[in-house]
Each structure stands twice: as C-alpha cells, then as structure tokens.
Image 1: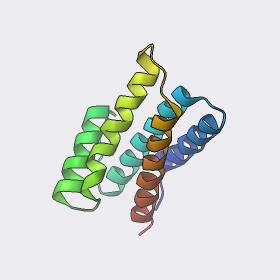
Image 2: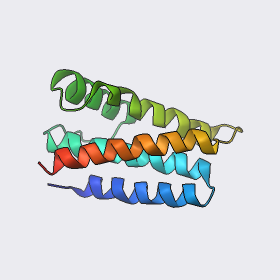
Image 3: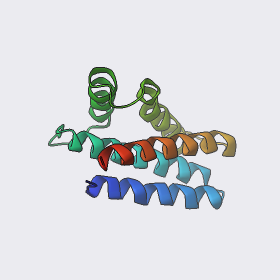
Image 4: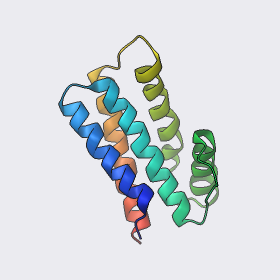
Length: 124
C-alpha cells in the first residue's frame, strides 16, 4: 500500500529528472535527496515506524538500523544511500562549488534503484 510520503518521493524523483535533463544539477541533487528521504519515511511507516517529527538523522538511523541491519528488508548497500545523497545535496545547497553532471548522474541512478526497491516492498 502506497502512502502520501511515497507520492512525494515519486514527485521529487520526477522533479530531479526534469532538473537533470535541463542541466540544473544543483537542483537535481536537492530533489534527489528529498525523494530518497520521503521514500525512506514511506517504508518506515509501512513497517510501523513513525515519528511525530521528521528528523533527517533519525530517518537515516531508523532506515539503516531497523530496516537494513535488524530486519534485513533492504540490502546493506542502501545504508549509505541517504547519507550520500544528503552530502551531495548539502554541497549543492550550501557550498559555492556546483555539483557536476557526472556526480549527480550517479546519485540519480542510486535514487532510482532505491525508490524502485522501496516501491516493490511497499506494494507487497
């Protein structure tokens, strides 16, 4: 069963792709991170893990600790996806350095893999 946060994830994934296709690589990095964050929140909620307040670090810790390490629902490589996407987003948003096409292309691929896997899990 999909939920509102997965709908937001899909919207942000679409926005990230549009930004990438338009050469807006910093904006793409931003939307890619938020797509992944919303997808993680969606799957955590489907697993009964809900928080009153969304805290980026807590979402990452819950996803990695509970769904990857403890329950083994997601592959171990996914532990690094959210922090990595956030790191690149932070560079795009808060640094004078622009994110390169190559760097954001890799993150967009990671995002697509991440959200597709989560969607399959949510729809089970």
